Length: 502
Image (cartoon, rainbow, N blue to C red):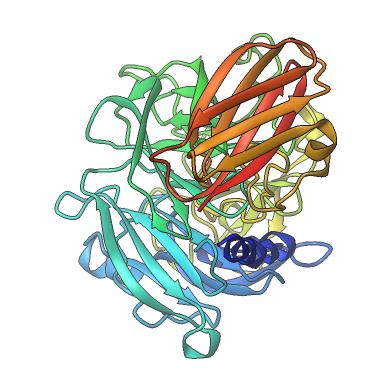
């Protein structure tokens, strides 16, 4: 059994070592695309005509595998039937069985993640923000090995929930560097509930619900994670801006901080989208309506609202600001769309082409405050393609594991640092008991935690120790078979060791 577990873990190791450049091609807007594989990004093209919701994924070398969005032809001819999503292959054709994906025409209704432990399967999660008859969160599965590498959809529109969801579907990699957390909120209630699924080699877990922070019933509820995954921002169109801490191991949010409370009608500002800077110390926000603003916040300031610095604004509905996204080149890109006031601007008519929708604006130094961030309006040309409000809802596919953390169960079977520190763990199958011993400890207090392979805490205890030795045993009867991680924190010292229940 131990050998099988070792083989299983070593099978997963290449996934972390070589996983690079999976987010290096963006597809969005009116047939627009950007390739970030070179020393400088270059414009490209896609088959999308998508006002908002879109996502894309590459292989580990940065070559586009497939992308998702919604089908503008169905939308334009029939109106929103709420199954107008489409999955496109790398040749920009509809993938086999990739039509009629549940999706409407909003902005964060789809996200793609690799199927953990597989080199050929991918999940495409989607929501239907506007739907009444078809509503909830769904997933489809792509097998990219089919059709000579062009892929095919082998499961489609598997329903996980049947209530209306907000426009804010998102995902972030688990602290073990392999699994994923998928987050969403419901729209049919005024609630502070966060819904999340853990995605592992076992599939999609049962839904986890956490109630925390401010309540909202607004359909535009964007959830944005910081680049290292330790914080999340919640933004609503009706003015809520909230920051929360996030634990990639447990999937738990904590320490909610309301920067701006949600407003009652009439609204004085409309928060549209946001993005953390690469360091996570600054936050960029777009507001939308008659006046569009691009605002920078200092998250380290004693008073974050007072730190607001308007980097750019326009007082016309002609060119509204849209989504902002941190790119693989560590710059932040901003969309605007064009409205001539005479005809509906989705899809664009051929004549609706100008600087507003043919370029993206760029923050070249997003970790610098104020004018030093070097914001350049309309500075990235899309090569004759056009943008609406949306950019790809791509998570950070290459976010590394939290090496040395309690949930780092996959990168190695042994920790040299832990062995040197003198933490010893032995599990007795006969007694169904784990025996924990440690020596040469420098502190006087401890916290002992045990986590399963999915990062769930299954045991914890705190207390005082007699320097410089610790001992503890606890019964594991009824625990599932598998690998468990023991974390012993002693003042500023942290020791980690694993054991196996066969």
